[in-house]
Image (cartoon, rainbow, N blue to C red):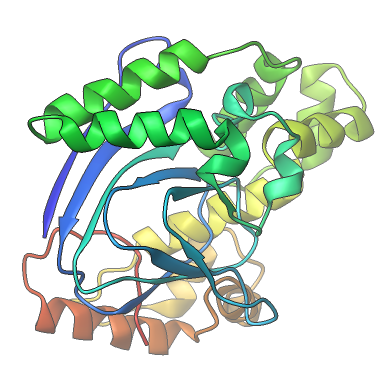
Length: 279
């Protein structure tokens, strides 16, 4: 599988973690993407992929691509035998300037790219990307399209600053302290977050804390779960296990078994640094 990524130029670098190109045979037909402090925009250029955003929802097919804001549950991605797409890993607040609706409306409910940008614009973008000579040119085309669509979003400065405080603390911060430091009420702060991020500051903090814990796991060595839970700021190991199961559907030990299987079956794979279990 070929994976190419790069950070966009300013001002998009304040909204986007990276632009990426993905092509080839996925390691498994089904991959699970746990919640993380990020949003996604995918322009699909190959056969449709399928997404299920929770056990209580049906799987949906996406031919043109999809958009999803901050998640509170894991996404299951079902890939065709060969996949090809260009996408954007977006900071929690980063989709707001490109959306015609509040981010909360898309939480845990991926929509097609056509539903966000319209069918003619989406078709034109996909045609231009498909005709590009290579991945780097495709990333430049997508970046230019995003720069063209960039618009103002009321309250973005407040949300961005507060989100960065949460990120710096890896989620271990009191929401009351955040609103006091920002000079606004907790109600106002939560409302802005739901509009621009899709979740409340408290939920974002939980996601940052969980993500920090997951990426501190080295599946190649025995894991000190009690020490890991304490280091991530969880009250105790039982709290950590409960949170882990809510975010991934797996126990921590089962998650590590799945990651170890991935590394064993796909050594050096382009996705081996991602928290992508396939159980």
